[in-house]
Length: 113
Ligand code: FES
Image (cartoon, rainbow, N blue to C red):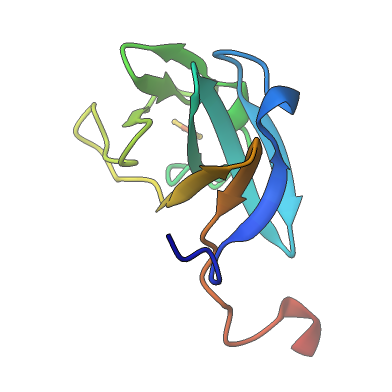
């Protein structure tokens, strides 16, 4: 299992069960959700009004609802479950109790502008 393009984000045990956690890693807003021994990672930015609140969403039936207007997203895929826009989802690996996330390299940084 290659993990060279994955970034260590946190430990599995630091994540509470069925409660979102916000982590910002190099300008990437992440919302992490632990369901048992699995972790799902979505963008923390809602595609509706671009607010960083997905981690505060209510979890039910493997989806999360944005706390602002209630758009819902599949935790595993980021696909909309309410017929609206999808949200970005990240690949995750759990290795030795650590949560690793595949974060695409940016071609530019906001500091360049
Ligand atoms: S801001 Fe998320 S549903 Fe409106």
